Length: 108
Image (cartoon, rainbow, N blue to C red):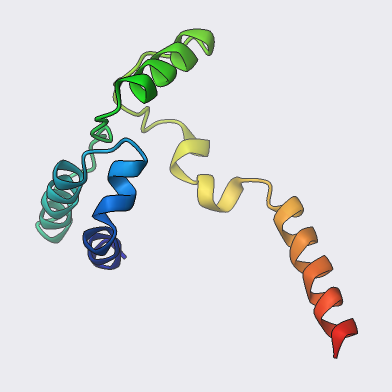
């Protein structure tokens, strides 16, 4: 999965810059993370390398409002964080898929 992400991001460096991210640093971080995974190193957090100062300010402001600490390591004891992909509420997404499938079937 990470290999695909690296490949995709290497082909979309301009898009990353448009989003305010440092594409070169991000790709380098992901390649480093890939090596760590292959070497069975333990997980550790990393921050996206932000170039856009306005974006960084927005992130810092949001953290302040949410009473969070910018750049803090992830809480690996937080079950929701660790298993978010399986525990999140996807009912809205599933519902929208059903609507789109029904629309397609009516068009036929």
